[in-house]
Image (cartoon, rainbow, N blue to C red):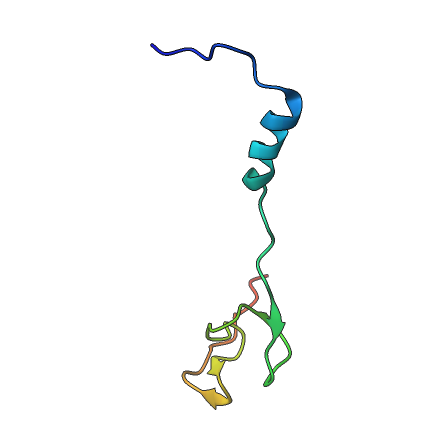
Length: 64
């Protein structure tokens, strides 16, 4: 197996690791109901996309 001839410095190692971070998804607000929704996705709360209602969402029944 090939091994590095010299040890990588901390700066070089950390420069490589800067790309390994996670980013939170971008969220916007649904213009119909105001729920947070990802861009270019149908709203899971009301079923609207680009100002049109594509499907109706059933309300969840509470058990108890």
